[in-house]
Length: 169
Image (cartoon, rainbow, N blue to C red; front, side, top):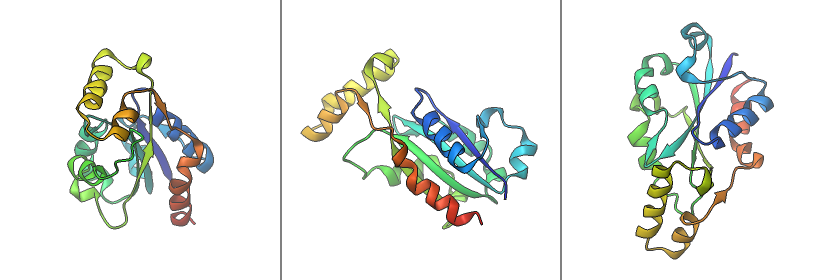
């Protein structure tokens, strides 16, 4: 079976996960916005990595524009977002960003903790994160959002690797 790791990253956390996954599974890593359509068509399964900013996946537009090419493939999503004690928004992120035709019972979705280092963020991303922290009522969530955080660790991809290995003979 042929597979690909596709990803879109802004600050490098998603790229790091994509590289680890690709290395462990011996698959090529490709920017989906630069993929050759023949290579995409020849793939039996895809691992799609994207980060979340203000509730939107970086690959939201690409997913919608390529739904017809993706809907017959086995899909594994790894979505990289803020490491947070609040996982209640995951379902909404999925519903708002991944086209319904791609959300089949066979689709696997994993949320992986990301990173942000305030000095590395663009001014608008840093401001948005600080505004979110200031608006947060829960002290634990406020603490997480108002300081640098790096939860990107190779151990976090274990579930993704297990799911792919159980699918690929």
